[in-house]
Length: 85
Image (cartoon, rainbow, N blue to C red; front, side, top):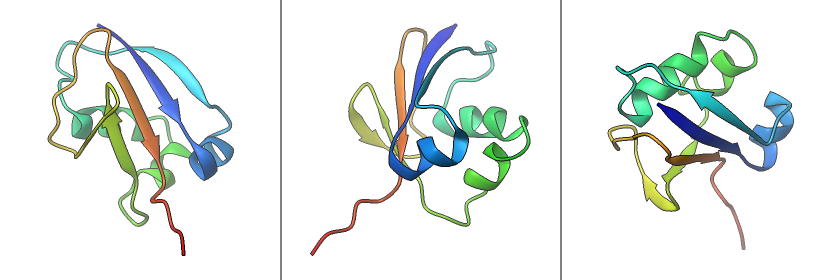
């Protein structure tokens, strides 16, 4: 199962990449499972996705949460909360 992962703003800077194509194991079927997989890479992924800082997610340009399902060919985007005044 292949997915396109996008990282925006400060996440892209911290991780050192804006996007990647990732082959997902068959048991990786939710955003939470993808995050757990990314954290196994160690730093800076582990610290970025450890829950200490809020990270927003969209699957196929639809906002979601950690329970959102993912599948083959999906685009999963991670980005920090947007602030404004």
